Image 1 (cartoon, rainbow over the protein chains, first blue to last red):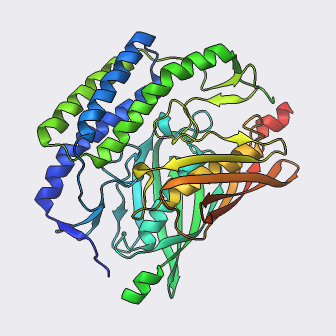
Image 2: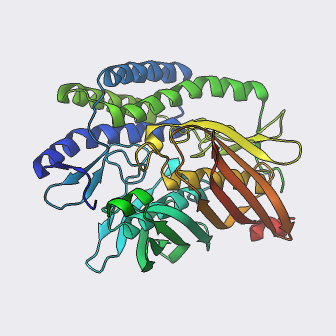
Length: 209
Length: 209
């Protein structure tokens, strides 16, 4: 049960990352440009039609690869489409979550205009999205074990500025099928949001376990 | 303090929505296509270069409009770039939040592949993003009054399926500078996630009264 994913070789992973990373990065630029552009009507309409044509082309063939694969060398799951870490999801910043030997997780990342709530600050719900994800990663031992969010509590100490940020998470304790995780988002001045969550092993994993 | 935003006429709002809505929709298609495409390497590289050229064009001119405007007819704030409701933000599904006369908020929306966490289910953090937003809207009387998230607690009753969903929120009570809001996400079978949050009026708004 701990490794239910199709394996991908290191070479094949790197080949796909090199192909899809730049495509996704180009779409991320367009996400920002949609928000910030001051181009005239004609330029915007021309851009829109050109983007639709490119979408037509890309949509002609759909892959049927599994959603998550296991990296043959590192053993880590690769979630290509995840909205927080997915290399192929332009919604994702994306976070690269590091795992320390002591079992903690951390990520350093930058959030810009698409993630803004109050002026100059990260939308509170985006902080929740990042924290749910990193607490889930640490509670599931790097997504190796299925653990779904049971409860999540967020405490917003102050506004989180757009720009470079850090997220951290660790497991406080485990009790049977429950893992109690904690974490936080920090800017250069310290913690902006604290989180704690209970992550639960689903019934099917318990039976298979 | 209750209406600090620049006004936009109904006509100008509709003109901008008609111009930028289709551009943003085209970028949303590309977000999905980035995840799902099975096109060959040459097609993907060509698409990437074409997208970069379009981004170059759109980035040449940046607008300096205020981030949020007030609709002259409805009096409602328009948050063009918001990651949940923003008409110009391709990350946003986007939600159209309705306000009832009794002060409740609700939205019906559809979440697809870009918002997926576990297979076929909405990422827990995306549920948190939606709920933080709609609780914040109801607590701030439709974003008319500045109220920032203090705490937010989410209880995940079961997985939220991708597809058509509904979110609802209401204010339980207010105490001085604090509004206590509650809400939920529902699929056709009922509630999947419950939320409660405390939303706080910032110091500058208190002083400005």
